[in-house]
Image (cartoon, rainbow, N blue to C red; front, side):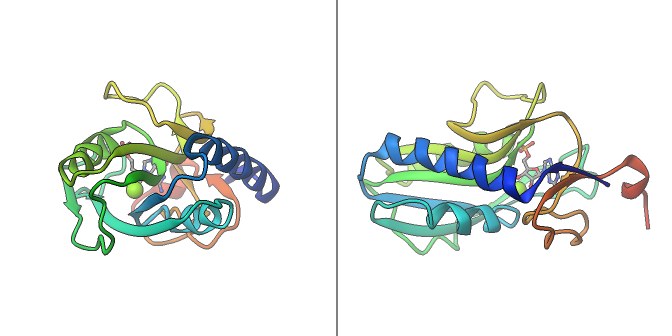
Length: 176
Ligand code: 5GP
Ligand code: MG
């Protein structure tokens, strides 16, 4: 396992992204929606750096696949979304923009729910992986195509607790 982003780098990158988000919304009320599960640590850090009136919601979006290289069909559950998004600015927060399929499928759901605007923010954007025409509106870091863990992101339920982001070596992802 090798460290890709230290705690200090994460702190600085998230502060930069929060500053961009603050400027973009300019004090307007925001509904911030975390995509479970990998985004919860970022979500907690981000909301503490935003100063506009905030509603917070959560949705579940999981690829029904055990192989991280081959995502299966996406299961979307907006049933956890406790806050009303009708007529509101919505910022979707996810851990990683990889192929982009997740956010590409989630954004229209929020258009359908009547959001006034829908934007996306991610901790990490993987370079050269996008399979959709959209890009995240805010991304704290661009990283090479490696499988990463830590800061809320797991490999088979492990490593979420790490305060930094690390890349797993291929042998560390072998079948157990
Ligand atoms: P996308 O739909 O953009 O291809 O995939 C996004 C989702 O796949 C992320 O929200 C994340 O849950 C998962 N994912 C993609 N790459 C990685 C990775 O390197 N590590 C972990 N832990 N999850 C990943
Ligand atoms: Mg995810």
